[in-house]
Image (tube, rainbow, N blue to C red; front, side, top):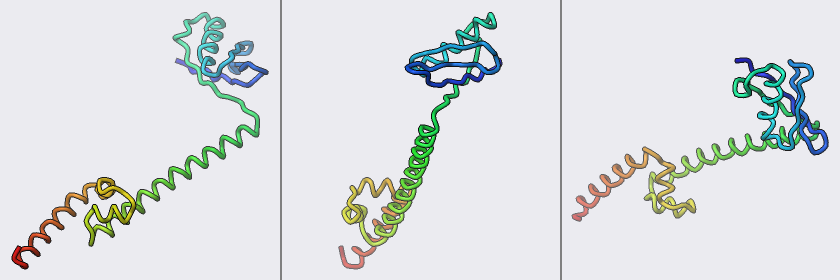
Length: 146
């Protein structure tokens, strides 16, 4: 099935729809979310096909200022994703370092987190860490006479 590229550009309060590969096929819609259906209908009339048999790809044409604003927003979004990942790595590292000598509860207190969050940050390492700490605590108690 062929996919028809449809350009959508604002014309006053409407979206003007054009199919470049089919000269003379135009439509319009008030809302962009209705563009696909309107374009399919216009193409189906021109080709004598069923609208459900037609694939369309809507490409919006926006003014330069709007395109630049979208690019800036996308860059900010990507930076936020990268910052969140860097924070996750740093928090995990802090939890790993702190729980070498502290319980998860104490590490959480120092980090301003719950001990459950510290456990989440440590992931699978947390269970092994608890086993190591519990084992060393038991050995210490035996030596002391506990």
